[in-house]
Image (tube, rainbow over all chains, first blue to last red; front, side, top):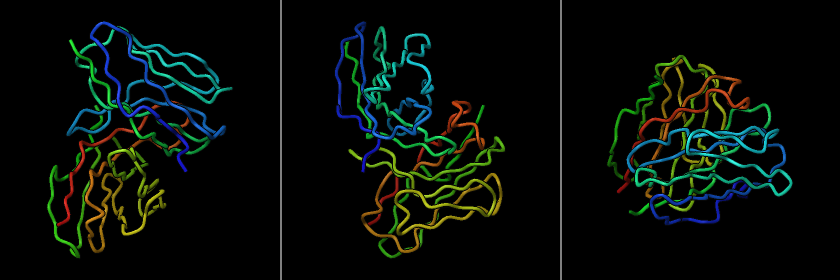
Length: 112
Length: 117
């Protein structure tokens, strides 16, 4: 039972354009949502998060949007750079727990 | 800066062996976690610990056990390794009670790629 879903296994974007990575969830008890970025042979690194009481959070080139009614969040990267090429994992935290529930990941490739 | 260190980057073991994966964190985090990452399946939680000598099963605990004798160290044990346990294993740590407020997210080690032959 996949509570956090990333339906696109891969995405290819030209440098300078916008990258949009999507994530859907099924559990309305999730309080926080996070995005992690992972390069090969390295551990995931935290990128950005959003509380369930907000609909947008921005940090430099990265913006996360949350649509609670649709149980959908997205990560926008503008402008995309070749160094952004990595696997991106969406994750959610259930209320009053410290456990993360991860999606299956989307591999982003940014080409020149 | 938080550092989570996994003892081995690559490990090759044989079927039936008892395998130990070690993880150490230097930030006095209460919580420690073990995940495995497989293509198309994302990161799946095996076990976690919220205090010394405390442990809780994650989503896929079968075939694994853990040990937390000291706060900074969390060990994952494959009791009798099998080929379906070939995977990337990731350790993480965090402060207790802060993740779900969006503070201090989990920090990960660089992983151990384990091959069982």
